[in-house]
Amino acid sequence: REEVESPFRQVRLFFFGGGAASAMVALYFSTLSTLKASMGGYADAQPMDEALQSCAINAVSVAVCAGLAWRDYQAGEANLARIAKGGALARLSVVPASMPNTRTTLTEYRRTARVLIAAGGKDYISELSRSLNSDQLSDKNTLTEAIEAVDVILIPVLLENDGSVGDTRTNWLNTVAEDDDRNFDIDRANNIVSFPLGNAAWAEYLESEIETAKKQGFDVVGKGFTIVVKKNGRILRRATGQPQWGGFIETMEVMDGSKFGMPGDSEKYGGP
Image (cartoon, rainbow, N blue to C red; front, side):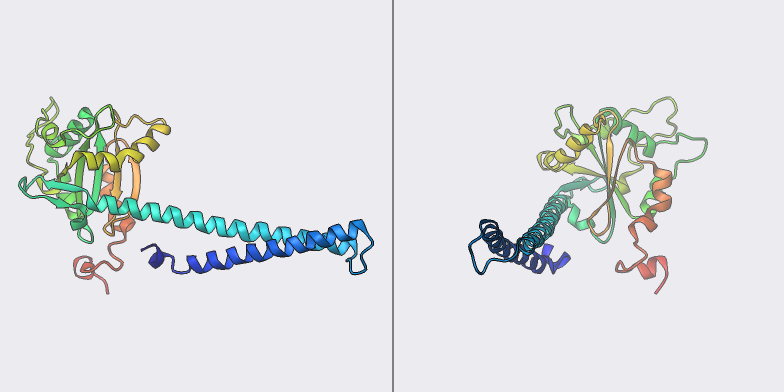
């Protein structure tokens, strides 16, 4: 897949690597010429200024070609790491809340749904559950319908203090309504929610995300974080805290670009 995404990387590596090697050979001979010019007594010795100029040109050529080759190599390694992590993400298993006896992988959501992973501690998961399953404002809560309309699947992930993944489904189902949570119904958001299955695999995938967030000073258990995965399986964005549903829903179709070439979108959204 890396060759598909960057088909000329190997050509560039060969070109820049070969250029660096050729420049090193030329630098070797120009260095010898400089030594001969400095020692004197050689009839075929170049003038000192010409020899030094050749050395400088060859040294710059080595540095430039080697630098470009190294940069392209690092870009390739980073791309391979991203592809590997994307593959690990696709293999993660979930259980849809509406079909508790069905197991699926995130691969099944590609091209049909966006995935929003919301990871945090027990209080974070409970707050997320209440925000979707109860009426917290004066009118009826229609977040579930709006989220479903933009093809988003929510995967809450319960994080323990040691970085492991806990029993998310049980924590979600045991959510208790608070005073401001009217008409609380734990099954209200079932159509858009899936629970992680295989906690070890989820913990392994999220390990680097948690480490990065902690280095930036974020409380991943208390404040939580979200990862939005586009329909094509790539990461769209990462953010801390609870999902900001209002802005998220309003901008999702444009940010993910589903109106521009996804199969079946012409019929759904209009256009050519």
